[in-house]
Image (cartoon, rainbow, N blue to C red; front, side):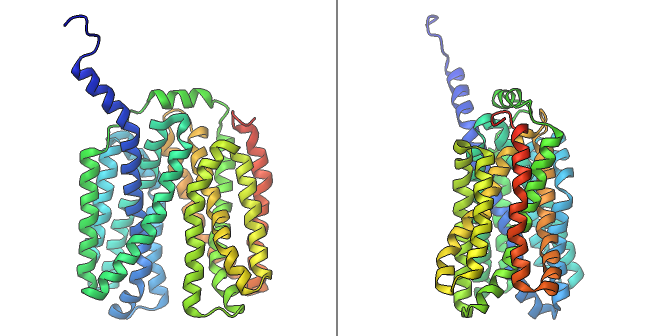
Length: 401
């Protein structure tokens, strides 16, 4: 048997190596769906909490702000923690903490208790974006753009599924029991990550190849990419703030308004999935210019067209609004320093999440001064303002210079 060049252990090792990227991707997708679902579950729970605790709109806004603010502010510390504990341990502990926060919310009896519980859950969710996306980028290396678009798309699935699930559960049982059920789901995901998420080396052959092939990336290039991400998020969140009012001016009914928003979100999910793969084939800059130009054109068209035509355009508007984000996320590892994927993603998500929280307020004040149509047109102009940044970024990308 000495002439046999392969042993059973070596074959098993090869199989495990082959399975490493796909297992990292799918467990990262599960984590993304759960954590994004946890984030948007709050929207479905706000009316319940308002009725149960007698909260005003300011207090309700504070609850959402506590979760989002905690999650955004701890992205960078979470990335640093992963460098010490490892991706698997940090992601599993963060998922467990996010689930525990919702269990704690189910035991709270006051506004302060809810704030503490949501801060706990938000701090746990801060681990997911930088760690999971960083792990996917490391194991896929140069081929990470497509997998990152799948990862990005999975978050939209969670945003759709978990708020719908909690809305159904609160009709069948007390909301506290419903939160405990959702918390158990999070614990199951945390255990799955702890048991099955592969140990991703700090430096993999794929990551080394990626880093050596993208030495053109720099701090300046990453700053440009982050600026594009911040502006792109502001366009999306600003438009979604005014879109219901635009459609109401066109005579849409309240039930149809929900359908209209669903069309935008469905298009957005499709855009995240498709544009990541499109960027891998057509190039980052070309895809960004196409999606931002399409966003501006669709915004103006929805403003000017009658309701029937606007409804047809809404899915395309959603594709354009969300499509850019997948291309941007897929470019983060190209401009990140060696072994710096988690920190780069943490910075990127911190900027975009903060933009998503602040930009509706800015556009809201603008709308008070110049009206809904003027503020909506400002979001289209912001999309156009991304063009020079995208063109300047081209020279920073080694494969597009």
